[in-house]
Length: 344
Image (cartoon, rainbow, N blue to C red):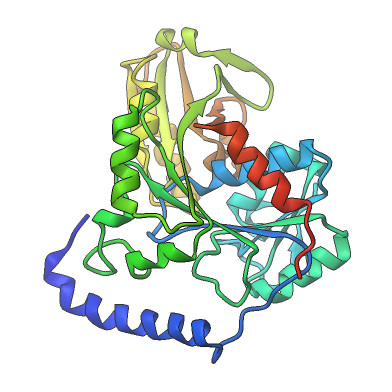
């Protein structure tokens, strides 16, 4: 959303960020390099580009190819501080919802850590866990680490080349920051995206000579899941659905859900919303007013927060999300080749 009346403030904010980036570029501020391959995943805008599914995709292909893989994030929204490794005793309040979402998906297949000091956390998790490769979540502006591979995400429906710097737009830094990326991944594309549209986006991005551009779309699982069971999507039309979301953008989810049911009541919270007893009471009240056959549906990320409330245990389902990447083999090969090389 563009807020033109705030454009003068964007000029000041943009100057501060440009100066910071210049200091890193000329060496007045130092970026730490690691011999262990590090892949950074991030974006130029504030949220909503689909980082979590991309991180899960990368963690999946790396771990399946015998790379000892770690993921490090800041642990947004947690009540703790410092460096922590996610385990079976962790909760979303201790490590953040995104870290818990990863753990629910992968368990011990990968190592998941959180630390607000990325440089310290990266060294700690690499050394302690003897990693072959580390994924840095939401790292594009955290320049105290220099990943050997930077993957920049941009939303198909709101690409960075049409956006403006905060607060007039949603960019954290100038759109020209894209030049630091090795791979640019256009996310949330229509599944039937034409070659003509792809070429349009490539022409607007204006990639550098060594940059690769890929396109991806969201792919939802064929069923929704609770702690105990799976429910096929084709059965959803039997139910009144109370949809609960606390993510940056629920537009795509709602559009997809409408293919299977028209009986949807949506309660929308802000991204990473810390659900309270009052919120659960509101949800319970709305749920009570639905028909005889009903369920509560949420996202995979919100599920790790909502399931902590006893009322939700038997009623709550989530819809797993993955991504499909155009030219998947080429993309995977780039990731696997990079992850097998120690850095100089």
